[in-house]
Length: 316
Image 1: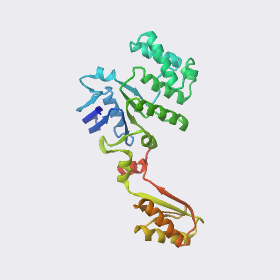
Image 2: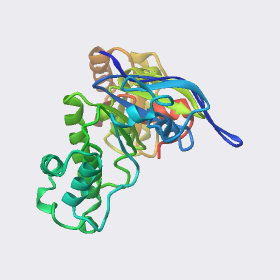
Image 3: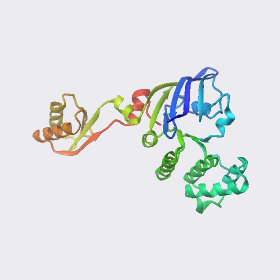
Image 4: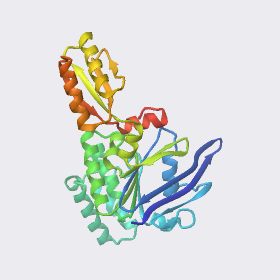
């Protein structure tokens, strides 16, 4: 599998601010890379460099096999870009927007109409195709914006926070479309403020902070770096100090670690390293101590935990 995106040592400075300080990326064709980082970390600057909207001060990058500085026209012919806000004309209909883009791309009027029809069907917009875009909901506009990016059938798609402000149903609908595109062979680079979005869509995640790549790996690999799975136990009677103390004693005995206690919630949490055997041992120990349990759950580290651990900041 070849690399659809490759960047080495990308640097970019804005007056007194070093936006990128040597960013390296490698994205195999037909995969999704989730680009995460706090506000101002360099995510959007990276996307702008890779999409030829911004020239780097140093380093080298290729997209779809072409150099972003020396061959920008060839790069643009092979990419699609959806920014944070839908870039469609509100006074035109959905169909007119897509036909116009196809015409500007020299598809020919007939081919442009055919492509518009295909995309309207794929994005479930046929019923609203001949309505002005100003009458569309936020989710419909985002779907139309993504459809507009696909008129030229790009090999690489850049999505810069594509679901910001969408309701959960619209967000899930867009996630489904992205997965279908990748299944068809497209490569996607995704920046997002929703960490569950990266967890759901990304094959690999790269975390950027202060213009540096500080972590890279699959979502599961990054989660394992944070720590072990944790067993969380809620005692049946909230505020029952005797039950909480007994639960702490039981879990300490089987894990060898010191549990943490959320007294107001009556929840005891402890690291668990032995998988199903550890769960069984903990359940038996709690029963032997006479602890009545309301909830008993295994919690894996999330990308939120990874984000906070690596950057020291909560996700947006």
